[in-house]
Image (tube, rainbow, N blue to C red; front, side, top):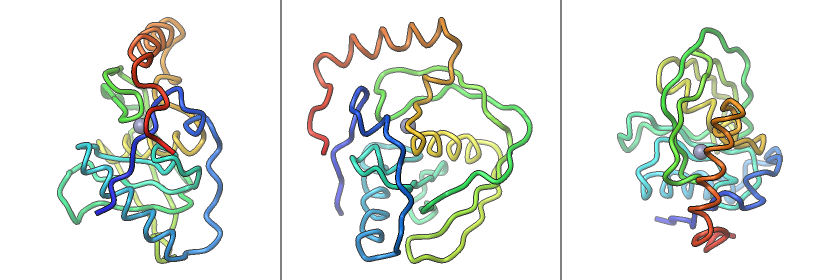
Amino acid sequence: MSVQPLCQEPHPVLRSLAKPVQAFTDEIRRLGEDLIDTMYAHDGIGLAAPQIGRALQAIVVNPSQVSGREVVLINPVLEAAEGRAGIVEGCLSVPKVWHRVSRAARVRVRGHDPAGHSLTVDAKGLLAIVLQHELDHLQGRLFVDRLSWVRRCWAYARIRALGRQSALAGCG
Ligand code: ZN
């Protein structure tokens, strides 16, 4: 078990472009395990590597929250997206802020597992939304950035108010 400290907005790693993983090493396998452990420790349904201070293209998703059904994706690429969907989203890096976000209803994401095997995920429903949320993290984008201008202003006012106590604390 290696639960990592979470980075929270406005930590700069959350705004960086995550780098592609070049080799499927033991370090990448450990990163996958850290993502899983940290996601479960915080009752999340997805997590991206920048959220634990690693600007690498790695995510985990598990909307069922059933241990063992999580999927770690390395170098994930959104191949197809269609339809419209939206739910009220939150983010472990933006605590206590929730907003409805417009997303695609169905997506196809291609990537690799931590051992380097090719993986394609065809998703709809909650899994499709979580995948899009985590892929955004790899582009340095948070869910609040997808809100309308007015809602984004509200969201950032709240983030700034909440963040005065906790910003930058504890994360690498
Ligand atoms: Zn998030």
